[in-house]
Image (cartoon, rainbow, N blue to C red; front, side):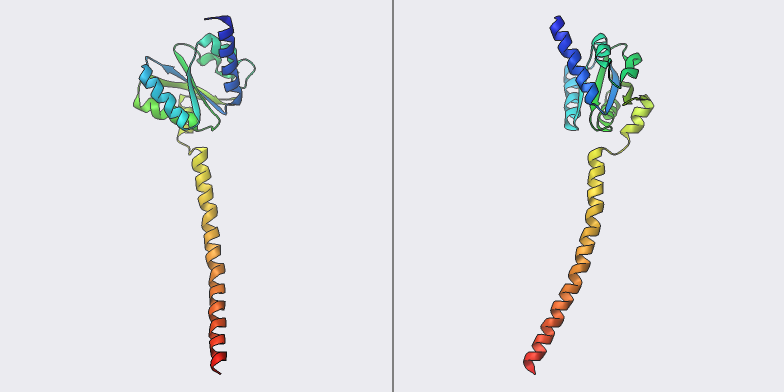
Length: 172
């Protein structure tokens, strides 16, 4: 591989590590092209990315990032999942690893906090940022509809009283 291409790969990976809220490191023990494509698609659907890495290039890309503590995990056939949502990459990786035993989660990190494989699994069990937002919006909308109903009831009653008063005034 040409030196300029290696530098571009290292720079791209460095930028990905810098912008990520989570990095999940996996061993991909013989994933087929179709399986890797399916995994990348599922990652993309949740706003995460997945990339097979050359360990030497990945180690260079880690320099100067908050994920330098992951250096020891880069042995063997390594791949990395990253995302802005701390739960998305973990959840997508764990879900795929349950279906395919050729993908093994070996660890990860959220910023400077290192996670072992069990830590990544626990993180994957949490609701994603989008799920939390949906729950919050639902909680906020429920009281608003109740308040609107309560406010509308007196107005309706007042309108009926005025209408009845107007009708009785017209008769008398």
